[in-house]
Picture (cartoon, helix red, strand yellow):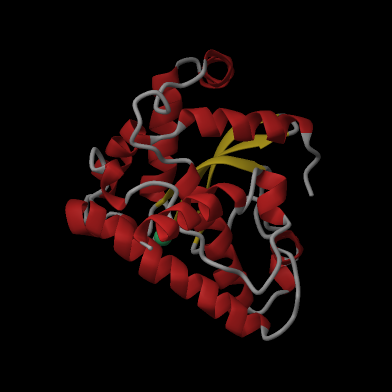
Length: 231
Ligand SMILES: [Fe+2]
């Protein structure tokens, strides 16, 4: 019985969506997919308890509250994000929260081979920032200086790569941001993402974040973003 439920969760985790476009087209009522790895597999940077509470409680609450706020309306994620400025706060925040967290779990990995950045993306980053370290500093700065809760992002726009930050559960696909673009990497800088281990030291959490980035996945998102028009 246990084996069946493990197989079912693997199947659900791998078939729920296959890329950015696919995530955007998920429709309500939304469902919480299991984490795509064990909660203790990111210990290099994030402890298992944080991962469990973050996924099972916080992400679940975004899903439940999004469904509640949408009542029985069937609507895709991107329809909400694209019109975020006109949406009631509860819909904007909770659908944003569901999109952001679903995406976030996939850009993390405890596997050393996923943590290696593919050359093509690395070269693109170096072209934009001069060195990979300068990009990291800018990303960390964006996350650390976001007042209150929010996210730091690496995005692909029609004019290249950019680092941006958004407050609350907003994201770069929303019509509320200054610079719209495809998110290809995101770091949750809400206290619930790091407080148990790092307490008030958000900058330390962001430094450790690099040890668990799934660059293989980020590069795949980047390839998709490069050839897909912004919705
Ligand atoms: Fe979060």
